[in-house]
Amino acid sequence: MDQTTWQGWDQLSPVLRHATFYDTKPGEHFGPLYIQDFQILFVQAGRGEVSNAGQRFDIDTGDLVFFSPNMMHTASSSVDDPVRVIGLHFLFHQADALHINPNLPLIQEEPYTNLRVRLRCPLYPPPPLHSRCGILSPVRQYCESLALSYVSSPQGRRMEKRGLLLLLFHAWYESLLLSDGEAPLAARHRRAVEQAQQMILSDLRAPPDSNELADAVGFSQDYFTRLFKQHTGATVTEFTAQQRLLKARQLLVEGRLNVSEVAHAVGFNDAYYFSRRFSREFGMAPSVFRDQHSLL
Image 1 (cartoon, rainbow, N blue to C red):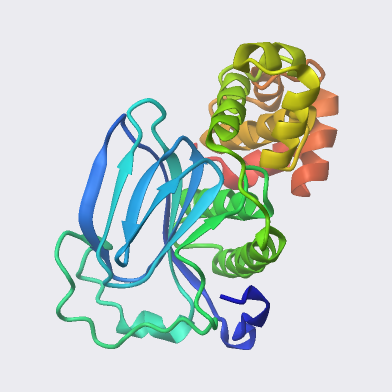
Image 2 (spheres, helix red, strand yellow):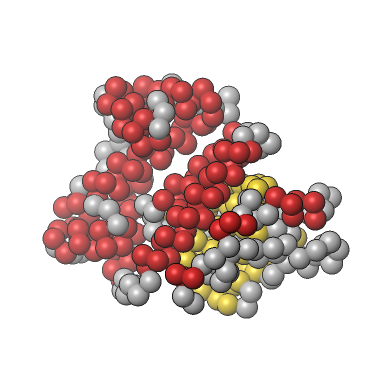
C-alpha cells in the first residue's frame, strides 16, 4: 500500500468515545471479540500476538493495532513479557455518533447484528491493521495524552480530545512514511533492546547507564548504543529522560504526590529543573498540569 496517497483529511471530525490504560496478565487471552466503533491499541510495553480481520501478527513495544467495527479479532499476551496497552475507541466522523447504539457494550464476544449503518473511515487507503510506530514516537505521546484526557474527564474537554485525535492521525501517518522501506531489527537484537528498556523502566530513579545495559544484554557498548538508537529512535539518555517525564505525568494525574515528590519519584533531585523539563515537554508547569488533570 502506498502510504503517500493517504487521502481524506478534510473529512475528519473525530470523536473519542472511550480510552483506557490496561496491563495484561502473563499469557492472558482475549477473544474472539467484536467492537462497535473503531479502536486503536498502542503497545506501551511487552509483546504478544493479535489476529485482526483474518490477519495474524506479533506485536511488540511501540506497535499500533487498528481495529474496524464488527470485525472479529483476538489477542494474547506473552507469558514472559506481558503487554501494557493504551486502548482508544473513537469515530472518524462526529455525525456517526448518531448511529451508535448506546445500549450496546463497546466490546462483545458475538457480532453486532443491530448496528444502524456502516461507520465510515474517510482515510484512503485505510490505515494498516498493524504499524510499528516506535516507543518514543509522537504516536505514543498522543495516545497517552488522549487516555489521560479521558480518564481525568470522560465527558469533558471534547475539543481537546478532537485536536489530539487529529494530531494522532497525523503522527501515525508520518510514522508510516518514515518506516516505509526500513529493514526491521533482527529478533534477538530487538529482544536485547526491549530487555534494556525494561531495565530502565523498572528503576527510573537510578536507571542503569548504557555500559551497564550493554553488559546485561551481552553486546559491546558501541554496538548496543547503535542498536538502541536504531530501534527506539533515541539514545539511552534521551529514552530515560522521556520515560521519566511520562511517568511523572502519570503520577501527577493520579494526584497522590505533590510536584516535589513526583520529581523525586522519577529520578529528578532538583524539583526546579524537573519543572523546567516538564514545561518544555508538555507546554505547562507540572503544578498547573496537576491542578487541571488530577483525579483526586
